[in-house]
Image (tube, rainbow, N blue to C red; front, top):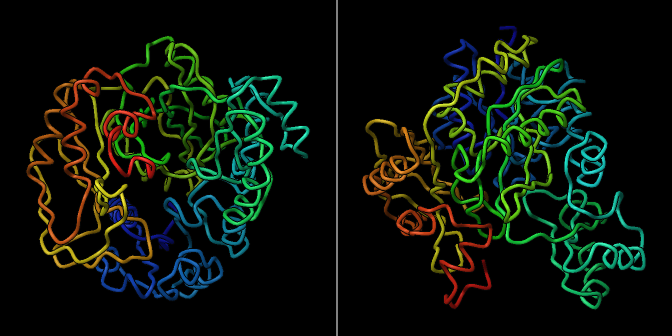
Length: 456
């Protein structure tokens, strides 16, 4: 292990997760924090900490110069970006490398190639990975967009090339909507991502959202199976599970092979996720995007494989080759993750930051809870609403659902609204139990008659 001292350029539960992996590997940790996170659990747990700025992300966790300077001042020799913030920012990775800091993640070139969704789509096509019909490159005019839409048929999706996680995406039902909305979509993309480039794809519905975990060392790539992330609201995931209950062996073989093909095409190094949609036939799948970082939902993969993804990231960043071959990866049982957010599901999942008066984590066999929260902790209003990730494992999906229900009943959080009751309601749903769901399930079934359904 060549990494001696690591700066964690992130916050919350992923910072705690990285600290734990580093401690087991004998790596000293430095926690970067904003003024709003002065009393956070990662700051308490790390070997040392350094304040990098004010409470807003722009002043702190999105300030690449401050993070690099903090790492150098702390005599760190590596930086882990976690997920979100600057984790998929090629310039930040380059700046770390220019400062002779080991960046725990893929190369800046891989990040840049996959960060441009239109370029990633083109690369996927060249690698033989299935993509939905649409434009090969960003569209240059409304007339070009209209011609492409006519050729593939309405409805179509307009997507921001620089977007991700479902942001910068609009469904256009007809040419009138397309002509009226394309410029607006491009303007929104400029505001959100700094680029107005958009491309067009055929809109496929209903679909499942299934992603493949890959990991590479710059020489070889293997996969660690798939995760089903179909339960969403506003394209934001709420529950994930592995394996997917609807993926057959044939579909799994084709999908994981495609994911590895794409990762090899960019000489991928570190952990990454290739995201797909699966159509209603459960036979066809199409590339969405590649996330060049550790995912929020990585614990379900760890649960079914027994492989520590964060430790692998650190080993590969240290220059080690992959210690395992594809044939070494064995899958066992079923794992489910529920995201426990400080949100009010009855108010359109509106964030509800505040003080956690009580916080009791569940335990027992097959239960894991990744969190940065504790009783008395004040959830800052500046960041995402995630309080904890509740993860369970058991031999079968049915048993895992029962274990998650038990764990949710054990968990007690007061002081803020959370998504706990939503998850209990979801897990009790007969269609969820039978895996009869799609990405619109929360909106179209669970909240079909709700007055705030439009917010989902």
